[in-house]
Structures are given as structure tokens and as C-alpha cells.
Length: 217
Picture 1: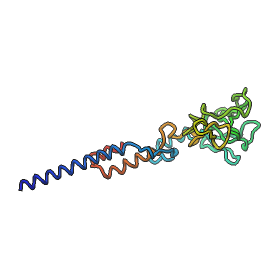
Picture 2: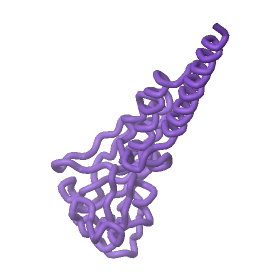
Picture 3: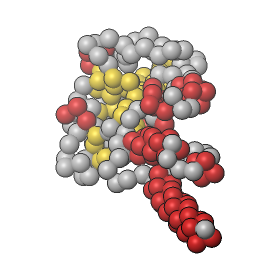
Picture 4: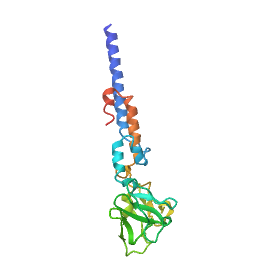
């Protein structure tokens, strides 16, 4: 009888060790994103897990800092507006508005070059037009990494993107994945983060309770 009890005890211990071993391994894998799960997803994808942070972020204007002009119509912002394009231009001449949300607005022409001149920048606070590179000839200042690497998400200069220009506009010296400063501009590609969180949630159903409680932080 003792032999049977000892055998049963050893079997139970063996099973316990195996469960613990594989549980820990799965937990470790769950905390690391795989190489194939990257990709930008837009700030909206962050909203479900971080609703308050998302709402506060959207009030900053960062996400709307690069606004495309569609069909010759001025962009719309939640808390501000740019009444007209720079003097000498109509909205059909403008491809993008940069800023326009609480501080200032600059403009990109239909070839992708920044609009320059004595009245090329609109200051929202004072509602005045002021100079922006007034000494530089119109249609010669590119929208390049000096601005775009901070004001867009997933920016790649033309030299890194095989000579590709955003929307095929020669004055934009590269391409971006998402317009504006999205969450992923500072926090990295959301695809890896989302994939990791999904794996963590699934792991809670498999791991022993003592380990599963530590999976999601």
C-alpha cells in the first residue's frame, strides 16, 4: 500500500513540475513580441487600452499636425481653423497644412514644397500672417527630414525609401506611414505591442493562477 501511495505522490510531483516548467516558458514568450508582429496601427488602436490618455492626447493637436487638403477644401480641426491659404494661393494650390491647431499653420504647395514668403505663416493666437523664409524663392524649400522626422510617424527619407516621395510630390523628400505625431511616433510600432498584449491575455487562461496574476502589468 505504501509503495502505491509513494508512486502516486511521485507521479503528482512530476506532473506539477511539468506544468510549472511549461507555464513559465509560455509566460516568458508572452512577454516578448515576435519579429513578425510589427507594424503601425494609428493612435485609435491605442484607445481601447488607454482611453483617458488617448482623449488627453487628442486635445494636444499632435495627431493633426499634418493635415491633407482634400478636393480643394480646407482641413477641419476640433478647436481652431485656418480661414484662407497664404496670399496668392487658393486651396487647390495646397496639398498639406502643417499645424493649424492652436499655434501656427504653414503650408505645402501642390508639388510638395513648403510655401515661403512675407506672409506665408498664419499665427492662430494673433490671427496674423507673418513671414516664413521670406528670402527663399517660392517652390524651392522641400519638406524634408528637418521637419518631417518629428512631425510624422514612420518617416523614411527618400534615400532610405528608394527615392519615393509622399503622394508622388517631388518636394516631400521621403514618405511617412502615418501623418502627424501619433502615439507610435514616440512609443514604437503598435502592432508589436498589441500582439504582445493579446498573447498575455491568452496566457492567463493557461498558466497556474500564481503565475497568471503576474502576466498583465
